Length: 230
Image (tube, rainbow, N blue to C red):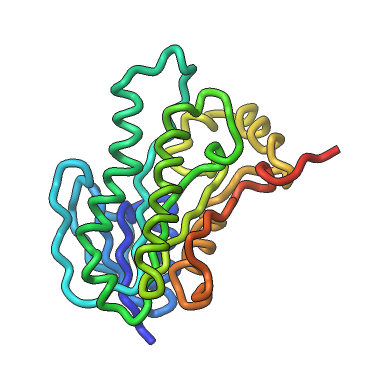
């Protein structure tokens, strides 16, 4: 059955890959992003800055929604200013809240809808230089669990907590082969995440295949948060 999905920040990276899978499956996708996608498919596109603009009005039931915008702001704690914490909180938490409030009625109109948000491995596994983004993503995890309780059984809410993934957002941390190799070596599975890893998991969470799952934060981190190699 053809379903309707909203992907916030779907013009590139994980959002783009998720949208392309859903479109290939025959579903219709509404993309909301600052920049027009440079690819074609069965989707509607709406230009929107999540922190400055009102979200576009979309009519009808929405079966799934994913919020992708985020930040990787890695600095020593002594160098962080209040504006750094505010910026990370705004894009990761307040942006998601605005989107969820804008489309609550659409989600409620579905027989069973699903929401996917993004955290980070650095919430459950403390990491140096992650104080600002870790604090923001920790709030995202609280939001996920709170809404999962409040909206069940009608709307499921889950999160993905990835380690570093090869996206444009992470490009400055993976500028050369040496950095890439070092990042890969920190993971028990010996590589960093790929966009396809997160997209496949997101599609699973958005669809009825995960219909008995809500309030969960799934670690997608190459084993980093769970195991240590000898």
